Amino acid sequence: MPRIQKLSTQLANQIAAGEVVERPSSVVKELIENSLDAGARAIEVEVEQGGARLIRLRDDGCGIDKDDLGLALSRHATSKILSFDDLEGVASLGFRGEALPSISSVSRLEMRSRARGSEHAWRVTGDGSDEISELEPIAHPEGTTIEVRDLFFNTPARRKFMRSEKTEFTHLEKVVKRIALSRFDVGITLSHNQRVVQKWRPVTERVDQLMRVAQVCGQAFAEQTLEIEFQGGGMRLWGWVALPTFSRSQADLQYFFVNGRMVRDKLVTHAIRQSYQDVLFHGRHPAYVLYLEIDPTVVDVNVHPTKHEVRFREGRMVHDFLFRSLHKALADARPGAAAEGSATIATSSIPAFSNPSVANGMPGGVTNGMPTQPVQQFGMSYPRPASSGISPQAVQDQMQGYQSMAQAASDMDSMGATTAMDAEPSDIPILGFAIAQLHGVFILAENQHGLIVVDMHAAHERITYERMKGALEGDGVKSQPLLVPLSINVSEAEAKLPASFAEVFEELGFAVEANGPESIVVRQVPSLLREADIEGLVRDVLSDLATHGTTRRVREAINELLGTMACHGSVRANRRLSVPEMNALLRDMETTERSGQCNHGRPTWVQMKLDQLDKLFMRGQ
Image 1 (cartoon, rainbow, N blue to C red):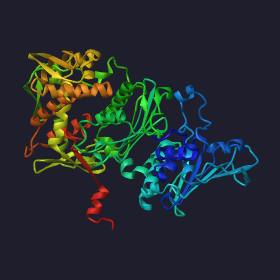
Image 2 (cartoon, rainbow, N blue to C red; image 1 turned 60 degrees about the horizontal axis):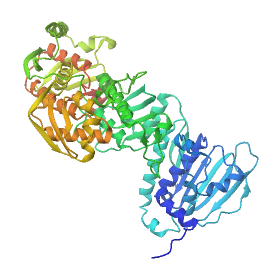
Image 3 (cartoon, rainbow, N blue to C red; image 1 turned 30 degrees about the horizontal axis):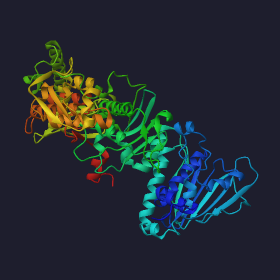
Image 4 (cartoon, rainbow, N blue to C red; image 1 turned 135 degrees about the horizontal axis):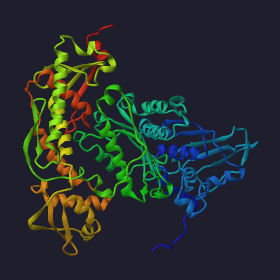
């Protein structure tokens, strides 16, 4: 057995570099973050051969004093924290003092800097060895310039794993784009092989910030987003979320920042994914650029060497805040948001809730009972649970409203002219006025922008689904005892969850208790789910509670049942509708939550603008 020996400084730095410096993009990330911590407002990044040959960064930050310049290349030397208390509430992007020495150990590094207010600038170099050059006076403006040449020149094994110049630059550009989204107030220029590739000017106004977002994410994203801002529980969430109609085949447009730091977090991803639960088609991914501002003392960023991962002290609260905020934003989005472009949804606060684990788990409360009576609605019907809690008078008032809509539309139609052409632009509804039905499947409507095409089954399915969810809100979940209690074998940790989350299970309609060190017994279940796979559902609930401290499995199971009922209860293809009925459906879509998609995530309507139609017929060319 070899004797234990202390590693050399160079070898220790190279080992550390294996975690911090994976490829040229890692170097650029660390250098830009140092510039931002130094208060830079203008950053220039120049690279050659994808960053393998040269990475040069210039900034106008506070610079580094002469006495600190050599120390900057030493491991665990930093100006950002001094004590454990500083680490607990770290607000800077960097804090370990590992980046520069790690980069210097696998490259030829030169750093030139002039501290703000100083008359002289100084230069220091490192060449991958333990030695650091003597300080040399040079001419240099206030700020810092760092050159990294021949990355991995002394670690052939690492260099062998580098990809092509194009691939490495693609990774590098993605990193710079993420940082450009994190700090709108900083101007950033990126050049590759003496050619400017990206240039972002500093901006402060929200409309200008959206233009930068469009530069990074594309104009189509900017045109189909909701601008949001929510506050609550000491947290602030703001940014842009794409409408469900702008879903992606892969998760390539998802940017989430915590206190200005780009992070990838399972809890965050789970909360956002759940907020899009019933508006995304299977296999599609949401797109968003979101910023969470939270007290730094409740976020641990010292989790991973690359600082991509964070740990929230109150993960359950953060999860529910994100879900409730985004769920509300998507619910409040009406057809006008997509027709007019980017819309704004803001609220000063999110109301508190007594039990965050179940506040998002059920639609207020669920009553039992199967659909027994149809409710007529512009010539169609949808099933309603018998004990819905809605009074006959409320139904009658609702029906009178639809009859008034239909009568008004009939009066307009009897005028013999195209309604949208005669009406003032301000009087034209977002989805316009119906003009025809196509093959008994689509409704054609005219609005001030052009032609609206509506899938009437998909649209009516969403309306029916949302009304059924509302009808099921009542006094709480109605439960049904099992004739034979269900025993489930679980892990020792899962067996403790029913006691820890007793209130959660009760509000979800379950009676669950431990039946041994690795067994639980289910004695009572929600009435609506009595025919479901109870064991699978309980296991899913336990998994969610163990991982996130909250669950929506029961809500999803009930919604899936309601979705099936809504699908079967909605108008079918080849059903002929009158113009008043079509107009009543359009008006209902304009006031229904998430009416842009059916329950399966398919779009319910599309807008064909006049300029698009002109192009089809080559008008004006």
